[in-house]
Image 1: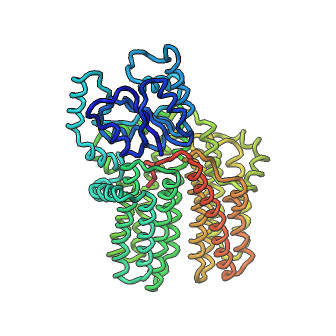
Image 2: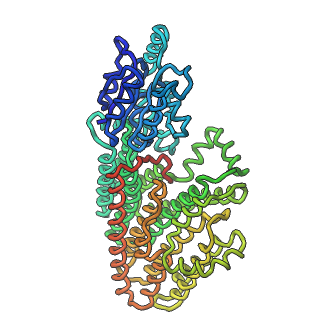
Image 3: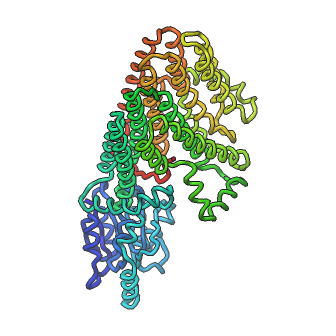
Length: 605
């Protein structure tokens, strides 16, 4: 149980002790700095500890934000400071300074908690200070100030502020106006019944899987039920994040579940629609797989661009300035958020079309909408990259290299081509990646199944992939290299499966691309959580994008169409088992050892 040490003289009628206990703290009293330091030393190093001034006046949610957020090792609001286990050493050191002769901070600060916070700042510690907005957190110095603070507390509805802050500050049009106005109350209902965000996330996944099952029936009633359930799943998807913000129940495991389940729900629903169409005599597996490939590549563009510019210095460009000016015009903000087809708009469109149209029409509209959104966003990012003046860091280059998912063949080739790569112009990496990828995809799509040319093109692709990553990816457009690799691999699988023209080949290809895409998403979430890329043995075992492409084209040459279908199925199962087992092991272990909690507010469209 976390411990809160109340310092100073208790104030008659103060509710601070009961408020701290309601937040889960065991409350202890200390008369001054020496007593506080003694009590602090007694709290186990594995537990959270807080130092709070007994005169504190404020909203309970201000205390909750300042003292219970699991994402930050050190956090403070006026009159209170807290440390998670990883921040205990810094807190203990600051406490010792305050207990030494003369202290170590400005004597004008008249409460111990704020003096400790000032000492932490002086030591260079990263102390999180939550945005309180209209919430009150103060340590009044006299009765009049205390009365004024209490009046300020009474003037603001703590619960209304808490509910409002449970909703993302920036979200899509559909989510903001059609979902969040009531889903926040569902989140509060869940919190009051002790439900966790992970439980709501799981409920959202199960609802989406049931929706996919309804779509797979191929009946109009099943399609209508699928559309309704898909919307219900999205409501729960919004609710889990709002519940996490409402109750500050952030966790590493929860962030991973939320992100991966979103992808699993959408792609499982695509498969359900394809199965339902097949029951009605319409084979749409190719366009279902195409939709998954397009959506995944859109995400990789988002991930790569953001990682490339995560910590770039002097990040300025005329395009970015124009975007900022447009953000100041209200209607353009919502229009620009809608045309990129984020998850709320996309799922609403899919749900409505499922209920009233056919799976083929649903996929066609989805492909057109996502293609337009991808063109719009990618073009804007290319313009920003070409016009900005910035220096890309080693960290950004390493992240792009990890996202590239180069296997042993590309790594070996990159070492031998390093000298050549250094002499090439700055745009060479994405240009070479694009040309190599286009060659293997076009050859697979335009030649007869079983011919040798896709294998020859795949060998060339291995060389171009090696050259693309032979030098650090610090060029203006080098963030395009990972999405070009993704498109090349996925589209090659799609083209070869379609050319096989045998029943079951495209569903097997769908499963293989889904398994590989999961591996690529998992890489992204590890990088976002500062955990680095997946282990080298996993990348080697999975073969890297170029190794898988070479193997798949070789199988297409050596096997009959029916045998190729079986091989795709075996590969899909093998890749899924390996990457899922390692991913689950990693994230569960990270959760158990208390890895810093994360909460992603910027999940891409």
